[in-house]
Amino acid sequence: MNAITCKFGGSSLADADCIRRAEQIIRANPERRFIVPSAPGKRFPEDKKVTDLLLAWHSLLLQDLDASQPAEIIRARFSELAEGLGVSFDIGTQLDKIAQEAKQHTEPDYMASRGEYLNGCLIAELLGADFADPANFIKFDYEGNLDPASYELLGARLQGEGLFVVPGFYGTLPSGKVKTFSRGGSDITGAIVARASNSSLYENWTDVSGFRMADPTIVPEAKRIAEVTYAELRELSYMGAKVLHDEAIFPVAEPGIPIHICNTHAPDEDGTMIVPTRTPTYPVVGIAGLKGFTMINIEKALMNRERGFGRRVLSVLEEHGVSFEHMPTGIDTISLIIKDDELDDHGQSILKGIERACDPDRATLVPGLALIATVGQAMNHHIGVAGHLCMALADSGVNLRVINQGSSEMNIIVGVESDDLDKAVKAIYDAFEVWV
Ligand code: ASP
Image 1 (cartoon, rainbow, N blue to C red):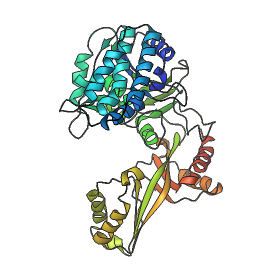
Image 2: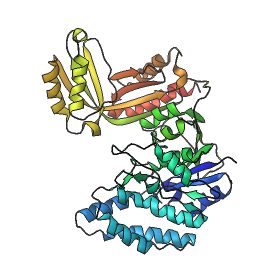
Image 3: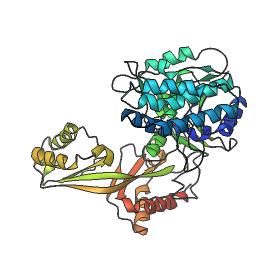
Image 4: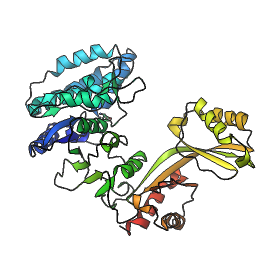
């Protein structure tokens, strides 16, 4: 029989009613056998996610401050869940143990992971499922990269009949210490479980019916994306399309397991299928944009004749431990586009380094940039896509600061002033929506 891995996001497990709904979904199809829960998320907009409460708790503990407030809220939330679901879950003892353990960890990972752990214990009990703690099967190397041996380890643990619950978001380092993925990382666990268990489908259950062609807070009428490839999706989620963690495709891409984004509140809606390949009929599948970039502009006459110029520029970045996103070039100019949180406060020191290493005519920092990715594999060899995009921006009065198209021709990146982001996304959406 085919098996399905189901990952449920925090908003789909926020209270007892949500968890009951998830249980109904799981029980509705006997192929749904591998369940990956997140920690309980927000029940209403002003609510706190359990992971954020755990992080607050940890930071107070480390500073020897009174941590009773977050600890009490967490205790109340899990007690309410256990009571609402009728499971005999001793949250008091569990939390006392966590508080003791957490003192030995200066890194927040152990504490942050406990939301998934506790929710996993609770849901396993509710479902009568086998609980597999990822601490024993999902392994990282010392650089924090996933050890591919995890697939076999976990695969062996997931043999047998019935339901399995594997909490999302964490694994362990070679030292045995718990390590989490970056925020939203239960999506990655779901993909690892899908691969390790040989599932034929990875269902990612969340609170929206899939991806939309553009951020619906900017373009409320944005159409749903019915089908998108792993590669297209990665470009969109990296650039801010929030539904799925941008690294979640890697574990499933090699075996080619499709990901289905489904809505727990509307389980019969179609959602979005993320597939290895598709036959596209129109050039643009989606548009995503993100603020928070700085550009370093370097000018030097005849730099194209100077051997090693580019290498010297990049070594300055390397010395500062800073990586870049894009590097558009002209004959006498190089620009480097860097995420603000990556650049941190190294900007001036990098400029000085470039002045020393490259002796440019001018080197300047230009902050306040937003990038927008217009993505679609069918734009390859489709004449006029970039022209159409630029006209749309010009017509809406947006100044185009920078433009970049990778050799795969699957993605056109434009840089605009941060304040123009929404206007630009709307203009690009309107320009391409009519082609769909
Ligand atoms: N609970 C974690 C977070 O809030 C991980 C996840 O939900 O995927 O980021």
